[in-house]
Every structure is written in C-alpha cells, then in structure tokens.
Amino acid sequence: MDQSLPELSSNIPNHVAVIMDGNGRWAKKKGKMRVFGHRNGVKAVRQTIEAAAEIGVKVLTLYAFSSENWKRPRKEVETLMSLLASSLRNEFSSLQKNNIQLRAIGDLENLPSKAQKELQEVIEATAQNDRMILNLALSYSSQAEIVRAVQCISKKVVNNELSIENIDKNTINNHLYTFSLPDVDFLIRTSGEQRISNFLLWQIAYAELYFTDTLWPDFSKNDFYEAIATYQKRERRYGQTSEQIL
Ligand code: IPE
Ligand code: IPE
Ligand code: MG
Image 1 (cartoon, rainbow, N blue to C red):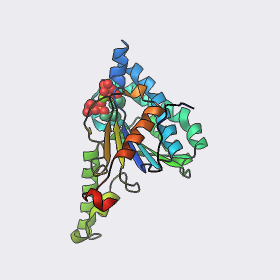
Image 2: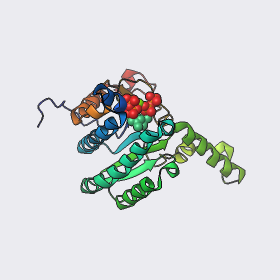
Image 3: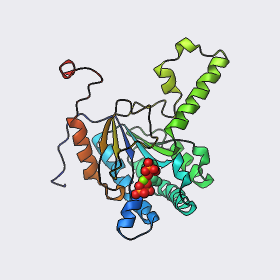
Image 4: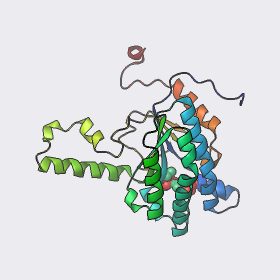
C-alpha cells in the first residue's frame, strides 16, 4: 500500500465527473505527437475507474470527446475513435469483473460504426452490473443536450401530452441524456484549464469544482484520492448558512 494515500472519510461523492484534459500538452512536453498523449491517457482512465469504484463512487462520468472535438485534425479524430473502440474491447472483462455498468451520453450516432458497435455491446453486456455506473460522454455538448430536451418537451406540449404549468425541474432532468442519474457532486478538470467546455452545464448546478495542473496521462489513483480528500473538506451549503447545515 502507498503510505502517502490520504485518509478519506465516509463522505464519498455519489456522482463524480471528470474533464480529462492535457493529453496533447503532455505529449508535446516529451517532444512527441499529440496522439502519443491520447494513447497514454488510457492508463489514467483505468486508474480513475478503479479508484472511484474502490472508494464507493456510484456514478463516474468521463468527458472523453466533445462535439467541438470533431473540429480537430482528421488524423487526431481518427486516432481518438480507434482508441475508443480498442479500449472498450480491452477493458470489457475488467468492467465485468469489477461489476461496473457502462453507459454513454452524447450524440452517439455521430461516432464511427465500429465504435458504436463496441459501445453497444459493452453497454448491453454490463447492463445488470450494479457496483458503479461508468458514464462516457462522447460527441457530447451540454448545450445540444439542452436544446434536444427543449425540443422533446415542446413536442409533448404541442401533442397535449404535457401542460406548460407542469413543466418543472424534474421535467428538464427527465429529458436530458443523464435522466436517470443523480446530479454531479464533484467535478474534476486536469491540465490547469479552469473552464467547463460545454460539459454537464445543468447537472453541475451545485457541484464542487476542482482544478489540478496535472496533465491527464499523469493523473494517478493517488491524485484521484487527493481530489476526493479536498472534496471532503468543502462545505456544501446550497444557499443556507453554515450554522443551518451543522
Ligand atoms: C484531452 O486532451 C483529450 C481530448 C480532448 C479528447 P487534449 O487533447 O485536449 O490535450 P491538450 O488540452 O491539447 O493538452
Ligand atoms: C474538453 O477538452 C473536452 C474533453 C476533455 C473531452 P478540450 O481540450 O476539448 O477543451 P477546450 O477546447 O480546451 O475548452
Ligand atoms: Mg484540451
């Protein structure tokens, strides 16, 4: 056991979301191509999944590819897509072994058919697993997700399936890709950037935010535990005073 592991209390965030950023800069620092960084990011993904499951996180959402990332050079996009397909294949047995259920959010129809197929296979095969949900955000845009929800809700209103007065927070929640998941408790972004980049805008309304300079391929289990230790020192007040929540 690593002696430097931080002590964690029983206050484990239910839903952790991670913006896995910094692969390109990691590779550049080593004088390599950006795709070298992506390949080396896979290990950090595995470490994070294991660490989250080990401490009892219930939902782990990983931002793997944004809708905006389609604008990257074709070669880079192709490498990312084939890495996705091969990682799904390689990690399948360890997801099963660890009782982890895979899900995906985003405009999945934009993914190459090979990646879609691998994804669907693993999603179906792990559907009964109940230790943790691993939720991959792929071709994901939070604004597009909200637009889609508004379209669905409007259709129901027009068809007299829903009345305007009955639209509330739950209606919105129920029409997002994340409809069955709890709100995000803790959002981690690596690489030093301090922005949200169109990720889960609605779902992070009251999330605690954590930014670390560590570049994604260097992000280890210990880094994850340290982030959780920081979360545990925060006081989530939800608009109330400190005295009220004690
Ligand atoms: C994150 O690393 C991976 C994806 C966005 C797919 P980047 O590729 O964004 O790496 P940087 O930010 O350019 O260093
Ligand atoms: C956000 O990272 C998307 C993912 C981590 C998949 P980016 O590197 O694409 O974000 P920006 O462009 O720096 O905001
Ligand atoms: Mg980036």
